Image 1 (cartoon, one colour):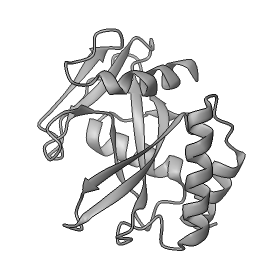
Image 2 (tube, rainbow, N blue to C red):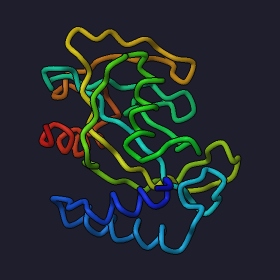
Image 3 (spheres, rainbow, N blue to C red):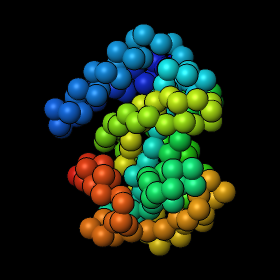
Image 4 (spheres, rainbow, N blue to C red):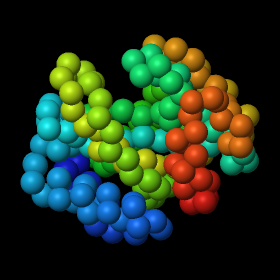
Length: 178
């Protein structure tokens, strides 16, 4: 199965819990139907990305990265690669690369969707159709900051850094999926 086919199958079978997420799911499926290249970063109209809400083993802390280009704390994630067999695999790969934590475990279905405008590696304004998964770190996991981050740290889910209040819905979706 190709990554595009996996994205269609994943989003077709996923049942979101909120009406706004169902609306986004339908929009994603429409975009996937219109564009065979919608999972490739070269798709200037926009492209699917995969991200991970990395929770500690207790589910009380979330790992956030201080994104160097965006200048704020975000969940881990990024572009799909041609070698990724699925959106979940892309999210897990990104989480592992950006956290330095081995043996992460990922949920089988997305927990949240978000579309946001961005100027990414294409150098032109585009949109990321982000598919977000809940990921759990093993007990005692210590993150190691990669070159893709200005900072990386655990935050209590009820005490997120200033300016990241918009992550609350995403983190709530991830913790409720456990």
